[in-house]
Image 1: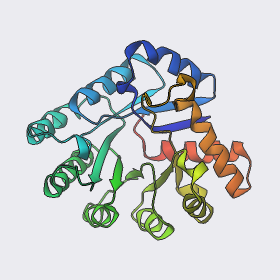
Image 2 (image 1 turned 60 degrees about the horizontal axis):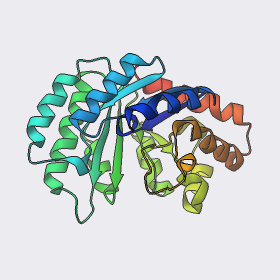
Image 3 (image 1 turned 180 degrees about the vertical axis):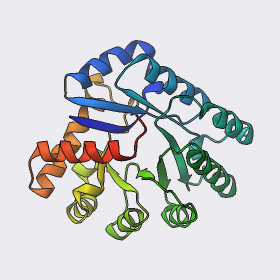
Length: 250
């Protein structure tokens, strides 16, 4: 069995979802986490988890999706945290030229980490061009339980080790199949510190619908880890699944 710890199911058309679910069930995927990037996405993730036994929900405001109403949105998100959810996600920092103000991002990130702590929930977070600031912020928060994971990891081994030392799992996606620097990280990082994901969302830029990444493809990430580590796929499935279950609220 596999667990995909990070997807964007709310972004698919409603008529797509049942087929996506059937395909992952046919590929031995036990649970799929549907995260929120906005208030609307977060509400949809909660609805999906209420309607499907193998969908777990995350709520959050993505740093790139902060609007002029972001403080109001954060208070609304705090209200949603009383719902049956598995994590606070997708949150974090994103330092691109077109990204929202860094100070606003940091304040929103810290606020959402506190929501997680107040509700004894893990976080699964995003970091782009912001690893140092992300690490500095996370060091200031003390989780008395397993804190979660860094999603779609794209850093180096030292950065991975820093996150592991804080208690976070390293989540690999299909980029592991393509990039040598990630293969090097996966070779060095213990399997007990890994989880897997697809970061699935509607890939309209791909003309062939069958080539869209979906939760069913999380097995491809596990297969790559199996190849890198020279261990059985079943062992990768079991250990990464147990790692995810160790921090997610079911």
